[in-house]
Image 1 (tube, each protein chain N blue to C red):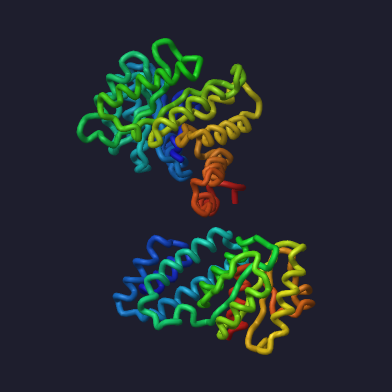
Image 2: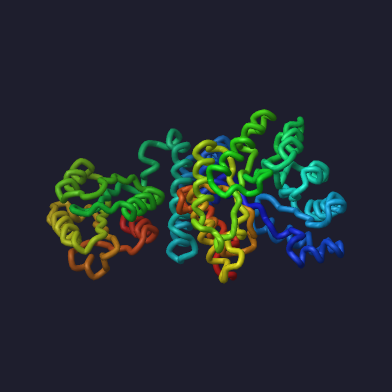
Length: 270
Length: 210
């Protein structure tokens, strides 16, 4: 399972404060915590006005790279910002994100196609200029458009993390049926593609959010999710990732599960 | 750390991908195949001990045994025939009417890792099949029987009784095990030994064959 650690995001109030005060220790500490919890990428989102975003991301990326060699998921809604900020990364990471919206694909895919950038990956949201399509069929149409562009620029499916877009369960009419249908269809078409999700979006405005998040994770992984934007420091979530991988037959002899336990990452804190 | 120690520690850690290579390196450096084999057997002894003390889990014991197998494959051409199973021959099987094989396989694996040659008769093994195997392999030292069901305990009893009636019964030891089996039951049916888990079974087999 690919875990994109979500703890360094300016939309979290304490993180926003640390960014405003240029509190490097705070950012570094969050990077270390996530690296120690086996994150695959460290997400880095400034969440500041666009004119300050590149400079802020530069500072944040430097902080993170000072303490870990993990690749960075450069997170901004602005393709122009991504096109600048990715240059601060010492090693290939993840563009977070593109979608069918505006000129995002035509800004980021050419960068990924450049020599030297072959190892950069990208998160592709299944939204477009109409917003988030309601039905699975409409999201899959956006997906087709994205894949056609990817092909045009020679971006292999294995470099793309498709995000089917997780919306809050409390206002959904069909639970997570739409997500599951999208995940299954995408997985069937492209065995090598990554499918990711911002897991905790599912539980907005519900009590005991953890239970909803855990249930979603299991069902989505069963459908074909192999990547997640989540908090790896959350022991219950991380534990569920390892146990579900073992249950799905993706963990020979349960050694990853046992290893995570031995490393003190899951289970009761010793 | 010497190469032999590296092999032993790789076996202990269940690193099956590197054990073969390390074994070859140890041989290239002039280590004797027998010494390497013994180091592996000792490493599995450590693994068994840890399992008995609840320090490791079943899969960790399985990967260690799998790792040892990889090493033994490399050693085999360098060992005198019979050296890999020099502790003796063991016949093992799950008794008639019982199809459970996970525990039996685990015991077979651990006994093999302890230096025995294991003749595995599989599951649902009738008494006659045990007797035939024994006839075909007169040098067998131990017959190990597994039963996982209370309903197949009588079949275990029948097989042990048939073994006990053999003329050369003194030449073999009979071991029994399985979830419903107890020391009291083993005594009652006239088996030589009962063990509660795969690691203890391997240890016991070594004692009995010594």
